[in-house]
Amino acid sequence: MSQAQILSKNQQIVLDIIEKAKGPLKAYSILFNVQKKGINAPQQIYRALDKLIEMGKIHKIESKNAFVACRSSNCEISKATAFSICESCEMVDEISDVKLSKYISSFNHKKGMKFKRFNLEFFGLCKKCK
Amino acid sequence: MSQAQILSKNQQIVLDIIEKAKGPLKAYSILFNVQKKGINAPQQIYRALDKLIEMGKIHKIESKNAFVACRSSNCEISKATAFSICESCEMVDEISDVKLSKYISSFNHKKGMKFKRFNLEFFGLCKKCK
DNA sequence: TAACAAAGTGTTATAATATAACATTTATTA
DNA sequence: TAATAAATGTTATATTATAACACTTTGTTA
Image (cartoon, rainbow over the protein chains, first blue to last red):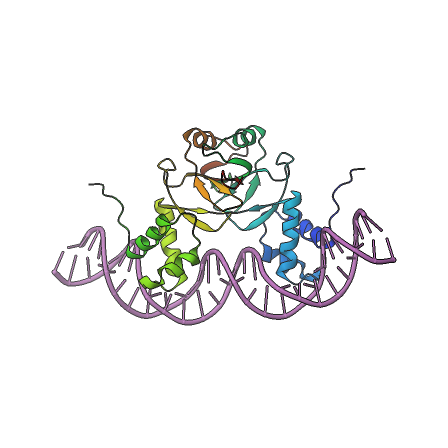
């Protein structure tokens, strides 16, 4: 029986915090939030983050060094991620657009490189900030 | 007369190093390389990097915290950047594909956000490493 | 051209992000 | 149940980036 991925204690704690958050969280802000739960060191956070990324449960927003929960079913374990980022309020929204994703995934580099994965970050002003 | 952008001393030093490099450079590796030229502090590097990015002379590879010279004329002061990154040898190549760039630039987010800029990073194995 | 503003520089200090290394514990599986 | 793999806890440290302040150079304009 293919059961849902079971998370370890720290992984679950970190994922819970990220899922509850309204926006992207930074590693150290996660750390400060979980010290009451007995997690004391950055390593514990980064290890959980690494695994959660591997599993596709969260994504890293590279331009912000921050982490968001995956809200999409189309990113197939993070092979094709796209985000819209508001430069004013820092809001991040995962873009789940099959057409866009397929178009980019099928892009072939002239120099003979075969891509396994991409990450796309859009910047602008969100509805509220505009 | 619209003359080419004139760079300050530190900006020129930093740009020279980045342009001569075969791959992306990290800020501190630039720093170590220019200490003979009288630049001693990270701030001096980061200030130059910021301006060079603003001018579109270089780009930051967000997933690597590293910097490459702009080799493209299509990115229009960095409004539309795309890179291919080898996960093995760390090689980075700027992708200058008008069709891809136009397609992505014209993408409209359903949630009413108007994008000013995007950055796309592809990952895979380059010809040599494959 | 003096005087003001803007951009750039040099410097010290420190903040923020991330990994190394090692000992131990828990879970999985042969 | 012994062996192996995954996760944990911990201390230390590496790496990346910014704050703040004094000063200099360059550009603008009155």
